[in-house]
Length: 278
Image 1 (spheres, rainbow, N blue to C red):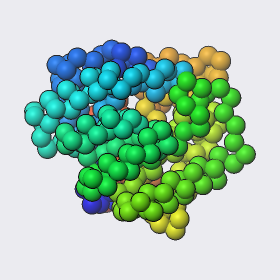
Image 2 (tube, rainbow, N blue to C red):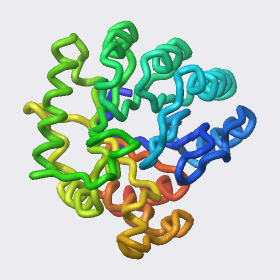
Image 3 (cartoon, one colour):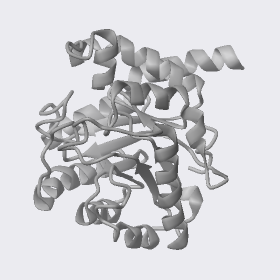
Image 4 (cartoon, rainbow, N blue to C red):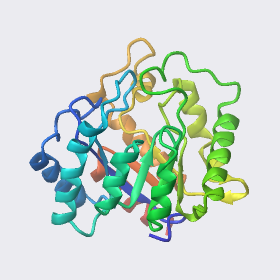
């Protein structure tokens, strides 16, 4: 994919976990995962993002062997049944990423942006066709929502991206392989998330270069808080309409990668917007 700065790609989420906040336990068997992937592809997903460890607020890390056991058999089966679909591994652990890339995964979606496993850079060098998604997160999933504080959330995230992009460039990783994700809901309050979304276009330019953005807002808690209140957010099952509205906003802002549990409505929004803007 060489037009990531102009095209919109829809990323379908496949959580092969027992405890993810929305779909935990639904697809943690290979047969169930494959059936869901078939549905995501049928609905129009361009990329499938496979995660074996929940990163919801308060989640506890799992060991490497458990994550490999959850993800790699699914990756192998997807590659066998749907060889044309692009895959992403949602992991920050070297061994998981290594096995994923060894089995044909094209994207590395790292919530720690290589801070947890710096040696992932070596894997990116070994697989020059792979792409890296750098996400911003304050803290870690176990504590990231314990009163996150910023002096200037936009400036601090941009400075973080600037440092990470420079690190990759200094290690001979082509900047064209980098995708940026400001990390909605990862160490941010509702107001932080809204400030990021209102100013989303500011994140496209880092170090005087333009980068594609990935955003994941699907059914996240800040939507529940906006629709309800901080103390009484609406349930995750009732955040579908709010998600649709925000996805429409992101597509109007020409976000390059939109990551979602609900692929079908994203495809429909894109079709309608193309009719309106052509």
